[in-house]
Image (tube, rainbow, N blue to C red):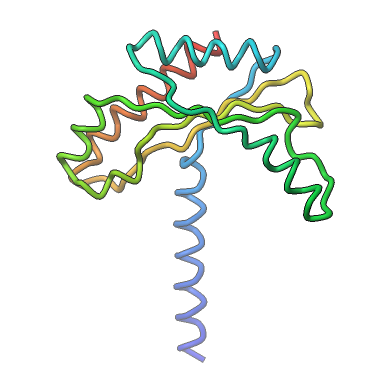
Length: 156
C-alpha cells in the first residue's frame, strides 16, 4: 500500500511539473484583422531586425490535404503558416554556451486563423526555455525576447 501511495505521489509530481512547464512553452496572441496583413507585419518585423525569413511552411494546406487523404475532412485552420528565420549573432551565443541547443534553431513563428474564429489572426511561437542554471539559459532568454518583440511589433 505504501508503495502504491508513493507511486501515486510521484506521478502527481510529474504531472504537476509537466503542466507548469507546458503553460509557458508556447506563447499565443491574437489580433482582429486579415491573415495577409498580420503575416506581412510579421515579415516586416523580422526584416526590421536585419533578419530574413528563410522558409514559409504551409502547415494549414498540408493538414487540409492530408486530412482529405486520411478521410478526416475536419478543417483545423482557415490559413496556417510557419515562418522560419535565424539570427547568426544570437544563435552563435546560444550554441557556444551549449552546442546541443542547435535544436532551437531556426526560430519559428506561426500565423494562423481558426475556422471557429475567422476574424481573429493568431500568432504563436515555441518559447526557447531551459531550466534556470543551464549554461545556455541566459543566451536563450535573448532569443525569447527577440521573438516576443517581433510578435509585439507585428500585432500593433
